Length: 184
Image (cartoon, rainbow, N blue to C red; front, top):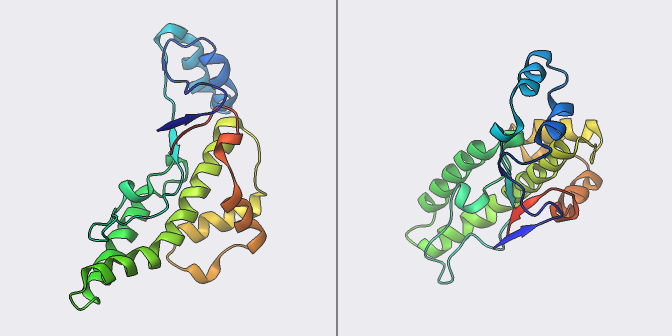
């Protein structure tokens, strides 16, 4: 199902107001800004970037199949962690299956239990930062964003940002933000 906030899932060719919405974003780069203003608005394709909330489980009802990569934790592309999180999923799945002594269900449960909390946090952070990007407003202090990016780029869960920052990210509801499309 697709849940939409106030913009109705905006995206497509020739949508009115595209240049007006893009101008503040590209303003710092004069070359891009001049190209944008030279293109007729009816020729601009505005892409609606869609995020996804973390799922309840990555396991099938009978616990014999597990989701991996984007199927498990597809995320807004703005923080550049989709592929990295997918690689982490594969590594954690292989490790869990290698250590499960033939008990597939136990191996898949270990994979989910060991990796899902981290992937959920990265996915939620990506949603939040996607809203920051699209709305051009600060939803987290810059130092927390830096800490989260540093943490997401490593495989070191010992250096998480503060619990207060994590709480903001975990409770963030993308659908409360204007212009957000989300698959749920």
